[in-house]
Image 1: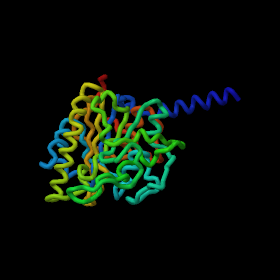
Image 2: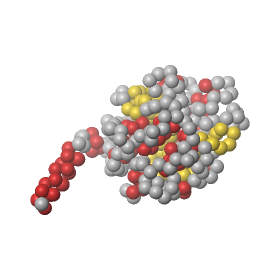
Image 3: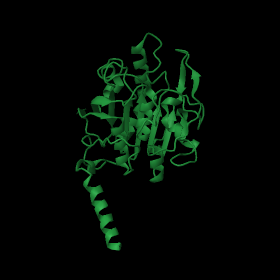
Image 4: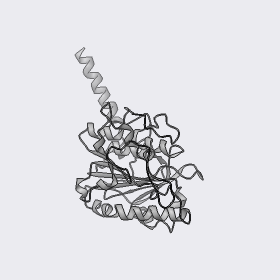
Length: 300
């Protein structure tokens, strides 16, 4: 019996190691990752746009994925997908205030493995806020904060795969000393600055607001990250229905080989890449592989 058990363990170990490709062995482990998600714009609306100079600067300096895609329409399922490896049966933008998921997710996996996690939402009224919406825009009279764009809020609690309210924070709590950042954090601009609320003279203004917000709030981190083994992941939830959910995704950091990458990826590939960086088990049932060919192989 002992011999058979040992053989089974060895076989399982060999199977797991054989599933790791040579490229996956060189996936880095950043000290910090920030994931920024913007709203409802296609690759062609952002890349090359004069209204998004900072985003295009990041695209030139980092890894730009020209075949990146959302996994669904409308917004909310995409946020759930990139955080938990599945859409949790949600196919619309309805408020999930009465939901309390206990499924696998990135935040819980990081905590179980001894790492740290936080989500930061601009215009979130307070830490641990679980309401659907908050604060009206003076520009458009639309809401600024939307729970549907902050996926981690759906796992607040004390049950399996859940985590405390203190890990859900307004953007005002975002540290100015970047060494105090958690291992992984989501940073979600509100709907005046994530390109969601059009307002003003039209869509070009929304793109400019989003680009200016990103530069104002994250450019110092991007520069700091270059010498501190840290990574920015910038992406969109979905496109504007004009193409096959084709969105911009950019990786920027010292471990990234800058360039234009044509391999097709989606939100599940991005999540699986982060999980692979910290040797976490895959969340959800998605079978997509981590992104491997964009990494430098030297230490940082």
